[in-house]
Image 1 (cartoon, one colour):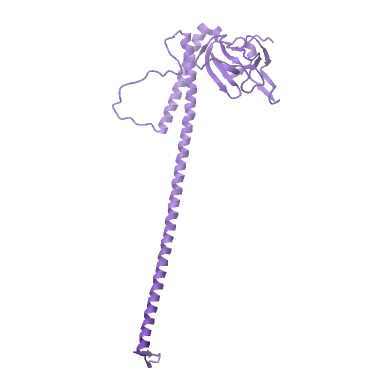
Image 2: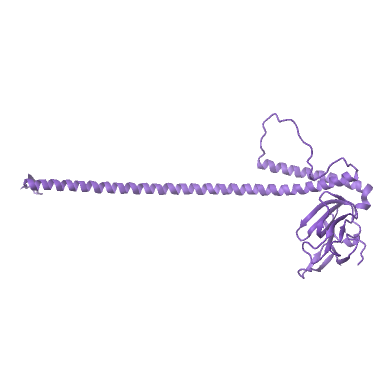
Length: 310
């Protein structure tokens, strides 16, 4: 085997290799080629893996950003839904109050007009119905539902005003003397705290006492000072068990800290009816009844409505 080398000056030089050395040279050349091929493949594989990993990272970042945006959209939607629910709950609470007052007012008017066949019970639903609708029904959207609630609220307010006007005429005609608060909420007992500014018996601080306290033996009977309709019977913050009676003409009386209430909302009571049993529930230092008189939404001194005696 001859190897010819050419120098820069174009001079040639021959190198003769024997069979063994020629075979060794071919093997070395083959090994070098294989080594270069393996190294090239390894480098190419590493570059491919690196590019794939970089692609995964880039795609993962895009997915994470997309998930974050979707979560933000879901959270925003949830907050908007919660606002709508809170708004509807507030409107519903207002409507429930209107309906309760209308039920009480209706019961009172039915009694005044001796319309016993009319049922004003708060548990009874009015009769309603009709044929199956001929067109497909569509659910209300939240804004439409809120508008409907507002319209119903306005209608209830309007009905309330008209019923109050009718009530006023009936009361002036027949029940004036029975419905105006008059007398004491106890047959026995004594006045333990008057209406007006006093030292709070629990905190020692100066406070406005918006009622009059009557003390007596535990278990004494509490009576209504006038005819009316019960508009509250249950626990109330600070008052404990309390009974509230609407007497019409803007008069409301309250009887608080009871051990037990004996009347229910919507029930008609007469002057002198036993409505509760004296106790010491709520914010109280001992057995007594806290008696309030409210006229047109303002607290008034019960002293003018009772015969004051110790």
